Every structure is written in C-alpha cells, then in structure tokens.
Image (cartoon, rainbow, N blue to C red):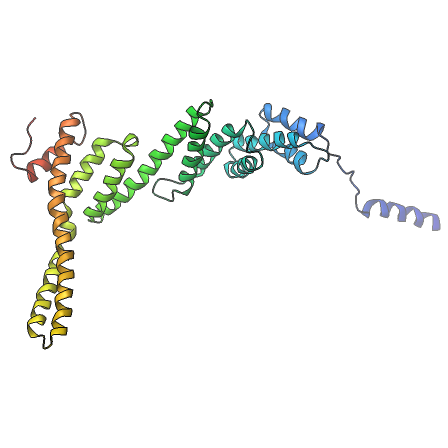
Length: 306
C-alpha cells in the first residue's frame, strides 16, 4: 500500500507540476539571417517575428546588423500593408541612421505609408501633409536618387487629394448659399493646385459663385441698411456732442462694412464674367460649356454665340 501511494504521488507530481519548457536561444542565424530570408521569400509575418527577436533578444549584434534588421523590419511591415507600424519603424530608422544610403528609400516608403493611411479628401489633411513633406525631402535632398520619380508620383497624388479637400469645402459653402466664401476656396484651388485639378470645372464654379455673391449678402445688406437708418434717427435725437460722436462712429463702421459687401458683389460680377468668358474660349469641349454659355447670356450683354 505504501509503495502504491509513492507511485501515485510521483504520477501526480509529474501531471500537475508546472511545465518547464525549454527556453529558446535566439541567435543571429535563427533570427536575423532567417528573418531576411523569409522577407525575401515574401513570408512577411514570419520575418517580422524573427527580426524583432534579432533586434531585442539577440546579444552581440553589431550596429550594422541592427541597422539591417530595423530596415528589413520596416520593409516587412510596409509589404504586409501594416502602414502605421511601418511608419514607426521608418521614422526611427531615419532618426538613428541619418547618413545611411537607405534614407531615400526609407523616405519614399514613409511618404507612401502616410498617404495610404490618410483619410478621404473631406476629412483631416495631417497625413497628406506628412506624405508631401517626406516626398519633398527626397526630391530636394536626394535629386539624383532613383527614388525621385516615385517621390514625385506620391507628391502629385497627395497634392491632388489636398486640392480635392478644398474643393469639397468650396462645394459645401456653395451648397449653403455662401457664394463669396465658396469663391475664396475655388480661387485658392485654382491658384495653388493648377496642375492637379480640372481647370474647366474650377473656372466654371468660380465664375458661377462670383456672379451669385449678391445672394449671400442680400439679407445682410438689408439688415445693415436698417441699422444705419436707425442710427441716423438716434443721431438726430442725440442730446450731447459725445453721444452724437459715438453714434456717428458706429454708423461709419457699419457703412464701411456695408460698402465691403457691395464691393464684393460688384467686383464679383465683373470678375465672374471675365473668368467665364475665358473658360468658354479655352475649353470648347468642356462638359460645362452649355452652363457657362447660359450664365454669360444671363449676366453679360449679348451673351456668347458658338
């Protein structure tokens, strides 16, 4: 019986004792070298795991080996489409190894990663700006690099997205009847993104909004005129020179603002016609040609004929 209890106790200890798995020994061969091979074979998940062990667990790694491991890790994340992780690794690589020959490649992939995670045009432009910044670093600082062409392509895509962002804002203001505000954005897009837009569309929209500025200020102008009339009545009833002076100054400010609105309307109509006349002449095959012609016929003498 005693012998049986000893046997059962031994079995119990074997079954319930915590397992003592053999600790893996990480070496350059089973981490760095294997990670690079797996990366080259397109096995990015395995490469990521192995390269992280090489960087953080292997002792005796040289600075050159760590640099290779970090750059390959960043590339593995990039190839896997894990762009946020790739951004973190490429940014760290550039910070740690600013003189590396791999910097142009790191920058162009960083630019592309930022562009990839940027949201739709109507939302925030933070990552679009970062993409532009990194692409410009390649173009300006490494003009002979083979990555310049790719950097220019990314820059064009980012600029186009930035232009679309401001066009969305302009279209929203236009939809809300804020034609002057819309014209400011359309004009900015035309001046600063001329290589990334449909020029005929922007000129058509800019001209249209400028011709309709009066609709935005119609009620405001009426309110200002009424306020000025009320102040004029108060000026006549003013009992002291000080009171009269305060009212007169207030009237002057209101008149200046009123004149600003009236000037925007008058200038807008003149400029809108010039822009639409130019668009009608420059874009004979534009899908907006009929709309441009109708606007010119309505707002200018004689209109336009084919």
